[in-house]
Image (cartoon, rainbow, N blue to C red; front, side):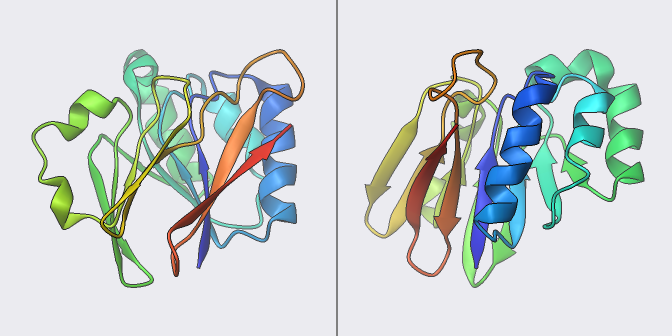
Length: 162
C-alpha cells in the first residue's frame, strides 16, 4: 500500500491543486494530511483526489474547527485531533501535527510516525521504523514545494516536488 503524506497546506489553493495531481499520478491508495489546513475551502480543493483522505487538525486549525470538522465530514474525509493511530497494511502508524505531540507516546509501538508543523523535511529511518515529514508544500517558489509517498510494504519514503 502506498500512501500520500501532506502537511501545512495553509489554504494555498493553487498548490493544493498541484498536490492532488501529484498524488493521483503517483497512484496512492490513501492520503494522510498532518494538519494546518486552515479553511474549509482547502478541503474542497482536495475533492479531485482519487484516494480517500484522513488526517489530524493542526494548531492553525483550532480557531476554525467549527467549520473544518463539518467540511471534512461533508467531503468524506476523516479528521481528528492528534494523535491519530492507524493500522494499515499491517503497519502501526501514528499521525500528529506538531512533533512535540509525540513526546508522551512510546514511539517503539509504531512502524511509521508522521508529523508536520515544522515545514522542514524529516526522514529518519531506524530499526525498521520511519519518522517522516515531507516538508514545505504551501510555499510560493516553484520547485521547492514537496509532498511525500510512503510504501507501507517497505517503509521507503519518496519526495515529490512541484
